[in-house]
Length: 209
Image (cartoon, rainbow, N blue to C red):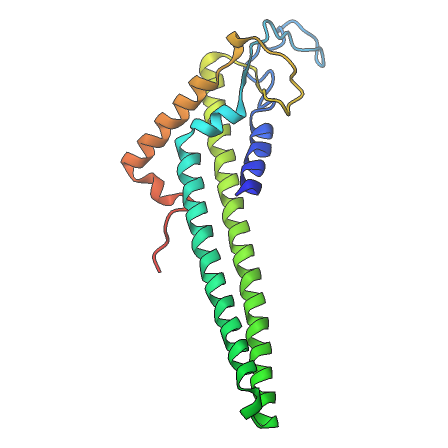
């Protein structure tokens, strides 16, 4: 899950970087000749703290808990299978003296096949979790960017930046911090989705077998 958190934070960096610039700013004067620079007027900038947003965004917390729970179950299943293989190997060693050459060879081949299948299963689980994490990352990206576009439009913002210890933004006044408003808006939208049943379509929702 550490890799998931890092991936989400990295993606948030892109999501809340310069989402759109001058899209809603003043257009070029009608008297300006073709190719002349647009008159931008006052540039309105804000920033969010991605760590704070991730920490308090209900969708992310719920999704992270689901992934962690699934990861633990798959890990336990893998451990059980590995223990079963270990038990078979120990049983083979205990009974070696009572086996014919043919029986011993057959059991060795069976153990080797089981070991190979276990390795393939482990790779399959790893790929499955990576795929789930990617889906969550993409979903988070879409949610944040869609909200910020609407929020920026309503507030007349041209630029929204990400501010934390790993960003290039070294200082920003607290008056420009919209983290709480963005988080509140994201959570409100998520609650509405849950009431309407849209959350069932989340990438981590339980699938019927």
